[in-house]
Image (cartoon, rainbow, N blue to C red; front, side, top):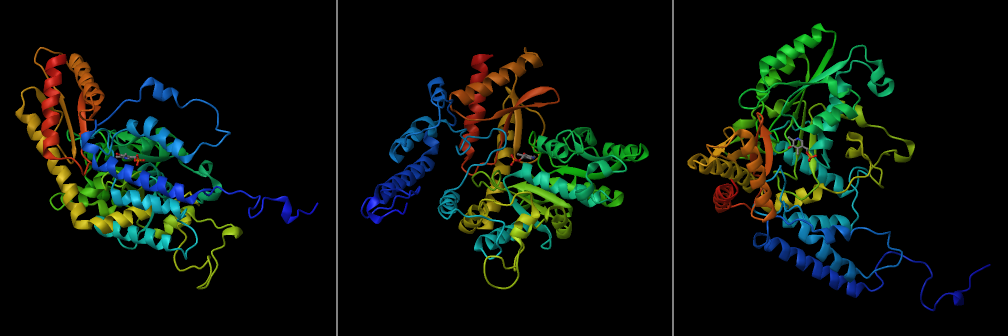
Length: 496
Ligand SMILES: *Cc1c(COP(=O)(O)O)cnc(C)c1O
C-alpha cells in the first residue's frame, strides 16, 4: 500500500530519531550540567576526598532495561543523587592512592566537543583529527626526547600501550612469519625479562600474546627496587644455554609500588649487546623527563625500542588516554597493518580516502577509536609545556617534602628513600610487632578514606605493609601533606 501524505500527522514525519524533541529545554539542561560540573571542580577541596556508596545507592542499580522513556531532567537528577557523590575521588587535592590522574577543565571541554562531533580517530586520513593525533604524538616525542622518526599511537592507557609494544617486539624478534604461522611455529620458546616489581599489565600482555606467563622471567630487584642487572644477565645466559630464545627486556620507569626507575642506560647496553628488544613501561615515570631538575632520573629512556606511557596519570588528563612509541616505524606497521578492500586507503588529494597521512588503525588493534588526542592537544596548548614541567617537578618536590615530615616524626617510618613521586611510609610504635603494625596501618588507611580526610593506599614492601602516596596530582598543596602526616599520627595514636 502506498502511504498518503494524510496518513501521518500534518507537518510531522512518522520517522523517529534520537535528537531532542524540544531543543530549547535540552539546551537549558546542557547549560545546567556544564555549570554543575564547573562548580564540582571549583569546590573539590570543600568535599570529602572519598565517599563510600551506601547500600541503598548500590541497590538503586538493579532492575530491567527502561522500556518507557524518562525525561532528561529526571535522568540527570538521578545521576546527581546516586552517581556523582560516589566517585573514586581522584580529582581531589588529597587523593594519592595507587597512581591516579586528576583531570583538567579544558580536557572536560574537549570530551564534550569529541562527543558532540562523534569524532573518530584513526582512519580516513583527511580528517583533521588524525593531524591532531599526529601532532600530539610529535609533541610527546619532543617532550620526552624520543626520536622524531618513531611511530606512535594514542591508546586507552598504558596496559594497551604495553600490549602493543610487546606485540611488535614479539613479531620483530621471532625470526619467522609469526603473523601467518602463529606461535606454534616457533623453533624455540621465546622468553622475556622484567623485574619482580613490574606492573601486572606486562604479564597480561605476555599471556595475551601467547607466550605464556612462565616465559616472563621475573628478575629480583636490588635495595632500591630496581631490576638487578647481574641477575638479569645471568637469567638471559641460563635461558640461552637451556635452548630458549630470549627476545625482550621490559624496563620500568616508575614502578607502581615505589616509583623505582630501572637503570635504563644499563638495560639499553645489555639489550644492544644481546640483540634483545628493550620495552620501557614508563606509565607515569616517563614524565620525569620534562621536570627541570629530574630529567636525569630517566636518562636512557630515549633508547627504548618501544616506550609505553600514560597521559591520564602524570599528565593529569581525564581518563582514558595513554600512548605508545615504536622506534622502528616499519616494524610497527608490519605488526598491525591489514587493509581489507572496504577500507582501501585510496590515493589522491580528494575525498575521504586520500593517503597523505597514515591510517592510525595500521598501528594498533582497534579500527574505530575515540578522539582522545583532542583533550591532550587542548590542555597542552592551554598550559604550555614549561608549566607541565614545573608541575611534574612540584609533585616530585612534594614527595620529598612528605618524606622529610616522615623522617622528622618518631612515630613514622619510611619504607625506603623516595626515588620519584611515591612515598611509602608507616606508623610505628616500639611495643608492636610487624604483624600488629600491618593491621594498624591498614586501619589507618581505611580511617583516612572513610572519613574523607585523604586517600593513600597500602602496599607491601619486603613483607611489610606501608601507606602509599603516589603524587600525580596538580591540585595538591604542601599543606595537604602536613595534614596527611599529622592525621596518620593522630589516628595511629588513637587506634593503636
Ligand atoms: C598504571 C600502570 C600501568 C597500567 O596503565 P593503565 O593506564 O592503568 O592501563 C602500567 N604500568 C605501570 C607502572 C603503571 O603504574
